[in-house]
Image 1 (tube, rainbow, N blue to C red):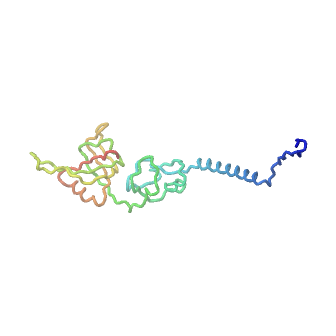
Image 2 (image 1 turned 90 degrees about the vertical axis):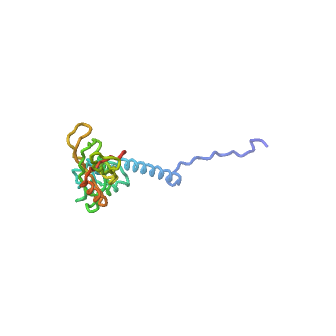
Image 3 (image 1 turned 90 degrees about the horizontal axis):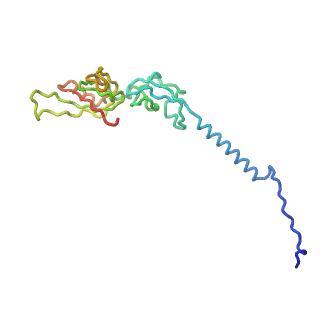
Length: 216
């Protein structure tokens, strides 16, 4: 059979898409969703809130007002409500419940009522030297050093630990140079349970030594 006997084939005609074409509608919807999602992501990335940070180290029991804080704008997302937001205002008559270092964001749980604080400020005289590494918020151990009698020997009592891990509230050091002051007073925060032992040691024959905890 010759090619002349075959019927001629008609090339398919391309139809111009219309708004009734489901594929065009789906494509438009996908583009619109992508644009909206991209705009939301950019907007969320630029959304910051004012949050309080400690202007200086806060120690347990210390009253906290706006003079002890400053405001910074940060982007915390959903975690912003876990911190003290400046737009919500500062709660009245609040004290620090834990140590908040200078420059740290103040968590909402870091402040509370004074009745919730279970530590007391105790003044510890120091005559063996106060290192300039000690400051408000430092953590120290307290030891009792018995007074040595003249001609003391091996039978004399040795220094013994009083309480571990207490927080320094304040340092009142005499001017004794750039590195170490030769005398002064440390105000430390002692738990109610350890308070009797510390007060007894302060009134006994001997001295209370302050030993900084390494790495704090």
